[in-house]
Image (cartoon, rainbow, N blue to C red; front, side, top):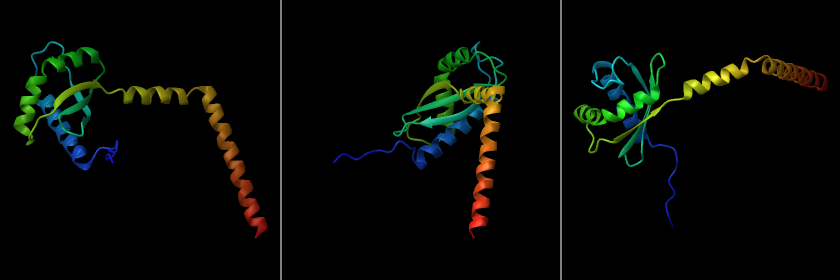
Length: 148
């Protein structure tokens, strides 16, 4: 029988991902890059997800203050060899994972959902739901106290 693998990352994967995130954040904070797309850009590393075999790691980044994340991703791709060398000096791993850079869109999605929830139509529907829930709970408590 084939052994099924779970989709959730293991403890080691999570620990290494967090360690790589700290190292990359330190590199981005202290080092300056000669690449024109990275000059003067401050980056936040929101998450690093290593693969189960730890050979690859997807790095989610956000440029502080907004900006063109496509150009930043292209610049990071060009300085990837330098980043891997610096990581090898700072992290004790048998293999330094190949870095795959991606823009983190969770903040944009959260802002979009927030805008949707603050629309007048949605606020009206949410108030109606809250009123119904309050009415139902008042009726339930009245039945509980009247039946006892």
